Image (cartoon, rainbow, N blue to C red; front, side, top):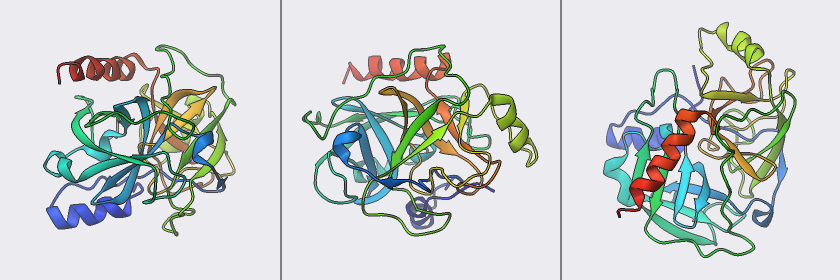
Length: 261
């Protein structure tokens, strides 16, 4: 049905955990330098890239709930790497102290797909590592607005994963059109979701990009969430919508909760 991240499948097999049938993906993009996307993080399990994430405070990151759900017992093996264009190499690495999944996250519909992570130490900010602000609550971007999506996801559905960070530009799809495309498969596009991509396909995120940033005007607009295939025609990528009040409030509630640590 949906995409499946390779590392998540391995962990699920090894530990008997639920492995959500989804993934994010970068197809049709180009090599990127981390200094141009310094908020980009690699979410690693057992030092292997599994998902993307975005740095919103020096010691706090945002990713997808399907990347963290059911993994509390693995928390001591989860790290975030920032400041490197290369997967698994260089930069700075921090451990995860706490995972704050949206309480309404639904693994069946992939709704409310956001999680906030508290790190054991702050990243040292510089040219290669920077925080990114959230898009304000209740804002919508016009259809056709182009966003950047970055990550180390596979270059095609089921294909190879790159060593170098990738980025692709994709336009916003009208909500009703995205709903029409996905309703053919019995899927629902909720108000907490927003779609970006091309009707003809060819450019998208892919396996391993889940949880990564969708960015417009240097603001975090979305979190790579789910879709069918990678870059398929009339099947744009689906992202958790940061400006939705319930998503936006959850992120800020987690920040408040982390103040007590």
